Length: 88
Image (cartoon, rainbow, N blue to C red; front, side, top):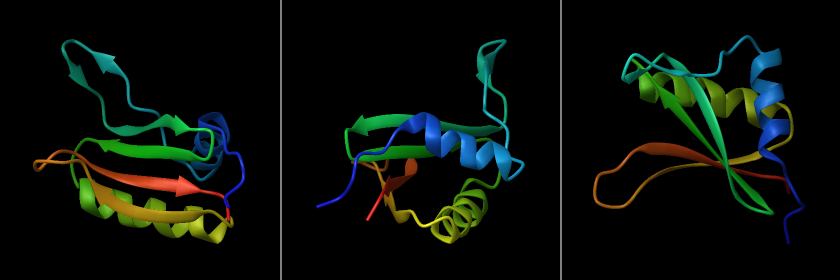
Protein backbone atom coordinates (compact mmCIF):
# COMPACT_ATOMS: atom_id res chain seq x y z
CA UNK A 1 0.00 0.00 0.00
CA UNK A 2 1.27 3.46 -0.85
CA UNK A 3 2.34 6.02 1.73
CA UNK A 4 0.72 9.35 2.47
CA UNK A 5 1.71 12.15 0.12
CA UNK A 6 1.06 15.89 0.13
CA UNK A 7 0.44 18.14 -2.86
CA UNK A 8 2.65 20.80 -1.29
CA UNK A 9 5.60 18.37 -1.21
CA UNK A 10 5.21 17.49 -4.89
CA UNK A 11 4.85 21.18 -5.74
CA UNK A 12 8.05 22.01 -3.85
CA UNK A 13 9.99 19.37 -5.81
CA UNK A 14 8.77 20.88 -9.08
CA UNK A 15 9.61 24.44 -8.01
CA UNK A 16 13.08 23.26 -6.94
CA UNK A 17 13.46 21.78 -10.45
CA UNK A 18 12.74 25.20 -11.98
CA UNK A 19 9.04 24.88 -12.84
CA UNK A 20 6.55 27.64 -12.05
CA UNK A 21 3.01 27.41 -10.73
CA UNK A 22 0.29 28.37 -13.20
CA UNK A 23 -1.91 31.27 -12.19
CA UNK A 24 -5.38 32.31 -13.30
CA UNK A 25 -5.14 35.89 -14.55
CA UNK A 26 -7.21 37.87 -16.99
CA UNK A 27 -9.65 35.03 -17.61
CA UNK A 28 -7.00 32.47 -18.59
CA UNK A 29 -4.26 30.32 -17.05
CA UNK A 30 -0.63 31.42 -17.28
CA UNK A 31 1.66 28.53 -18.31
CA UNK A 32 2.89 26.33 -15.49
CA UNK A 33 1.95 23.37 -13.33
CA UNK A 34 -0.82 22.81 -10.82
CA UNK A 35 -1.00 20.14 -8.13
CA UNK A 36 -4.20 18.84 -6.55
CA UNK A 37 -4.62 16.49 -3.62
CA UNK A 38 -6.61 13.48 -4.88
CA UNK A 39 -6.70 11.64 -1.56
CA UNK A 40 -4.31 10.83 1.24
CA UNK A 41 -2.12 8.71 -1.03
CA UNK A 42 -2.34 10.47 -4.40
CA UNK A 43 -1.57 13.87 -5.90
CA UNK A 44 -2.54 14.90 -9.44
CA UNK A 45 -0.26 17.16 -11.48
CA UNK A 46 -1.57 19.19 -14.43
CA UNK A 47 0.21 21.42 -16.95
CA UNK A 48 -1.47 24.61 -18.17
CA UNK A 49 -0.10 26.06 -21.37
CA UNK A 50 1.56 25.00 -24.60
CA UNK A 51 3.39 21.68 -25.04
CA UNK A 52 1.29 19.95 -22.41
CA UNK A 53 2.38 16.41 -23.40
CA UNK A 54 6.09 17.33 -23.53
CA UNK A 55 5.98 19.16 -20.21
CA UNK A 56 4.19 16.28 -18.48
CA UNK A 57 6.77 13.84 -19.89
CA UNK A 58 9.60 15.96 -18.48
CA UNK A 59 7.86 16.28 -15.11
CA UNK A 60 7.31 12.51 -15.03
CA UNK A 61 11.04 11.87 -15.42
CA UNK A 62 11.92 14.44 -12.75
CA UNK A 63 9.46 13.07 -10.20
CA UNK A 64 10.52 9.47 -10.84
CA UNK A 65 14.15 10.50 -10.28
CA UNK A 66 13.04 11.81 -6.85
CA UNK A 67 11.50 8.42 -5.96
CA UNK A 68 7.85 9.07 -6.76
CA UNK A 69 5.65 6.60 -8.64
CA UNK A 70 4.05 8.45 -11.58
CA UNK A 71 1.29 7.22 -13.91
CA UNK A 72 0.24 9.44 -16.84
CA UNK A 73 -3.55 9.38 -17.30
CA UNK A 74 -6.30 11.36 -18.93
CA UNK A 75 -9.59 12.40 -17.40
CA UNK A 76 -12.73 10.70 -18.71
CA UNK A 77 -14.39 11.70 -21.98
CA UNK A 78 -11.26 13.23 -23.56
CA UNK A 79 -10.55 15.45 -20.57
CA UNK A 80 -7.28 16.88 -19.33
CA UNK A 81 -4.06 14.93 -19.21
CA UNK A 82 -2.64 14.54 -15.74
CA UNK A 83 -0.04 12.70 -13.75
CA UNK A 84 -1.15 10.55 -10.83
CA UNK A 85 1.68 10.72 -8.31
CA UNK A 86 2.09 8.37 -5.33
CA UNK A 87 4.84 7.25 -2.95
CA UNK A 88 5.74 3.55 -3.16
